Amino acid sequence: MLNFINGYSELGEEFGAFVNPEGFERPKMVAVNKELLKEIGIDAGSVSDDDLAEFLAGNKIAPTSKPFASVYSGHQFGGYSPRLGDGRALLLGEVVTGNDSVVDLQLKGAGLTPYSRMGDGRAVLRSVIREYLGSEAMFHLGIPTTRALSIVGSDHAVYRETTETGAIMGRVSKSHTRFGHFEYFHHNGRHDELQTLLDYTIERNFPEIKDEESKYDLFFYTVVKRTADLIAKWQCVGYTHGVMNTDNMSIVGDTIDYGPYGFMDNYESMYIPNHSDSFGRYAYAKQPQIGMWNLQCLGTALSSVITEESIQSILGEYPTFFNGSYIEGMAAKFGLLNITDEIVDFIFSTLKTLERNRADFTNFFRALSRFDGNGDCLAGFLKDEKARCEWVELYDGFLKLEDLATEERHEKMKSVNPKYILRNYMLQNAIEKAETGDFSEVERLHELFRKPFDEELEFEEYAVDSPDWGKKLVISCSS
Image (tube, rainbow, N blue to C red; front, side, top):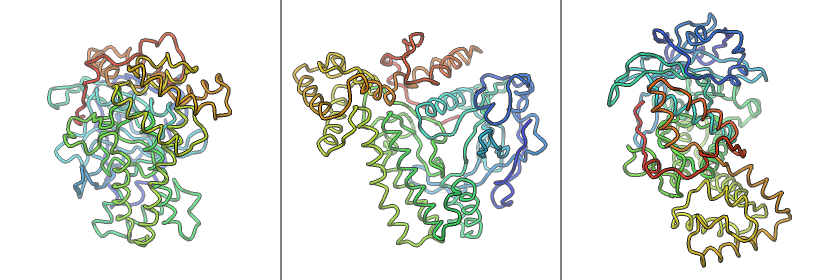
């Protein structure tokens, strides 16, 4: 079905283990991303659903595939875990896409590996739906991410807090290598393997620097910049990852591992979607500093090939990278292009105002995209009339310094302020239906979030604030 190359698994047995997926009896296709399927070289019209399900459940292995579970370590909630690895994920191999890029195809939930620890190697339907919809929503918001290819369902029972239904997700990524891969080899004193991994990663994912004399320094510099840019983009859409452990940080700067994530409803700087994060380590407002902390861990892991002086110098660029990307992104949400210190102060003071008013983050900025000078569109968000009038006067003054016609500004703002965001209550509704065998809401949300910035009247019901019960949802890590 696909012609795989196996660059990662051919690095050597020190990098993981060859493991055949366990698959499912009587697998069934629940969802498939036909656009992505075609991109990796499979025409959905040329293969039956049954054959596709057999392949994407891992029941049938392509002759060129060598399923592989990689080993890594990582810092989890601040503490070092020396041996983690792909406990329920298997890399089928790498595929050359239609535009000549190379991507990984991985199955998540395909059974036990040597790194499953006390787990069963399985994923449950609810968590697979969350990742499938979450990663595609992020992609269409323009945020770097792994992508969801498929959901294969089953009658297989999986035991978590209760008995649930097992599922397998097909995941496509530019790379599944994490900060934790480098940590594993560094902390085990295996510097030859670390350099092998580093050279492989640069060759495949950072080819523009492979011939540079200081390529390892440039590699770290690029990872720092991409990570800062990624987290800035998260902040601009109110996305909170939930578990920013170093083993959940992609070396190529993509969002990876959609567990207990959430998009904010009301603006809340200390928003915490993960019910296990009782101390708020990974709260929304803390994500930028956690990004820096994780990069420091990566810098330590690279200390056998980069000098300490260079590591610290590169890390010192992180605040500049993050602040520049974040302020530019937030200013665009306000329709402000000429960024000054006064505008930066205005942005942060507005966020505090939104928090005091418990205003919906996404809907406030979408409403602002219709601002015509009188502020009526903001009455539901900035409830005190006097304070609202003062804010409107200040904002309108900034707009008058811009060289943009009102209609052009509206269009630009609507292109960065989504009308629709994937809220936890939407996911919960889709999951509850899916658990009865009705996947229509999964399909509907997948279609909706292909165009999150568009005005689509048939989806208008998804553009309102979350119901009160939806705002109180917190998510479990168990999957």
